[in-house]
Image 1 (cartoon, helix red, strand yellow):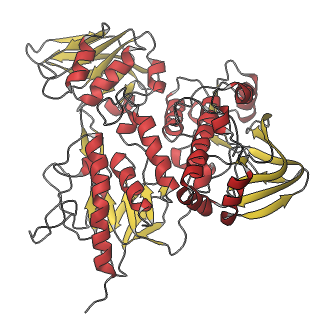
Image 2: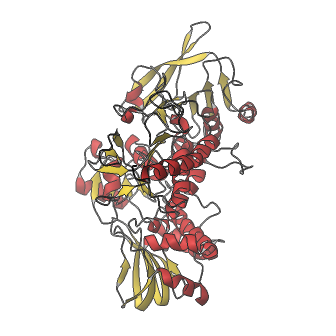
Image 3: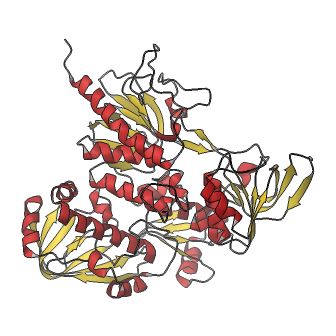
Length: 578
């Protein structure tokens, strides 16, 4: 829904700040991109839009949309005024902006019919043109110039919600608590606004703690806009309570189901949906995959100054929704049924539902590899990290940290964290970086004074208590065998990844020795499409595919390439049997 002005970056940045909706509303008038976030449409432009919607009238005081309820689509105000306000779960109502004739009310969530993040109430009699989500997507495609302006405004409005911490759930708990960080990371990676209240300093938060008297295991409390209070929820429970996950229409058969929403999966969704295929995308955590956690990607074509992984993949995520792809996050695919008794593949989902599609694209990527270190799992989220976002960087401020790894992801993380930490000890098993890291990153690391390279060394032990977090690590020289201890509270591990292919078991998809999906050869050893697996109709792209180039550009290219193969397969299966 209409909210506030945007910023220079139209991606979805870190939303952990709690600047507050008052500052958000004030920014509406002051921000230099206000006109782009809240354009006024001309009468001829509105006339072009009429065929996509219907006129709906409201009386004074009527609600056009309400926080936490599915949004009906985009409203174009033909006459009258609508007040946009923010309602949080603590009962606070804050004015955001007022909109009048010629303006439209929506934000990026309305492309897929997600719940509203703010309230819209008629001030006097109001006449609107209501364009439902499916017709809004058609408008964006059919009216290219007008669609570009609308799309930019929708993205800028979500950005402002995120930066102001407005319109989403309220997290209540200590900022550095592991479960606070877990939920903040989930919401941030999915571009969902929220804000955090520390009960030590905020009276409302302290009062809520006193009312619910949670045990330490119950924290953080999460208050969603309708007032529901959750006690330390799982990300799935939180997502369902907030309406982030929609239900699959009963009996719906998609042309293609994509498992994984990293660069390869999002690329497949964009190109397939833009060419008229019905597309569903499932991911268990967030869009962007490992690339989405990259602080800065500088070797991707077209971005000479670099771009964060979050910014790049958020653009693709929005683009896929624009073309009508149904993106379901967080949904875990548990298994794939390749029997095709009724001509369709079936994906079993963790919520008990089944998703049916005529073809499957495996884009599940890889999961972070966990070194064989005693008690490692006890400290995950409590000082041991597998990615480096602004949330983790905040925890490292002016501290010494250890980072393990020698690939591009490790290099990007080291440079990013060096801007926050007092010192980054980069622990590398080998004797150099040249064989595994891009030259530009090596040069940047060498030029950063507070990054120390520790070659021929490995981490062999962890110290501390799981309740209080990591307090130190033990490292060992691979040359001399000598061990030493380091007092550090944060350890970052970038030691590669293993393919996420467990859900393919029993389906007949051939894997190589490392567990990656092989393509280009049928089960009988015959030549197949370059991206097709041993099971006809099941394709693989990106990092999960055996022999793929483990680069963002390569993944995006394969996502585009597979669409031609999908058309070929779907066209063949559509032919009647002779």
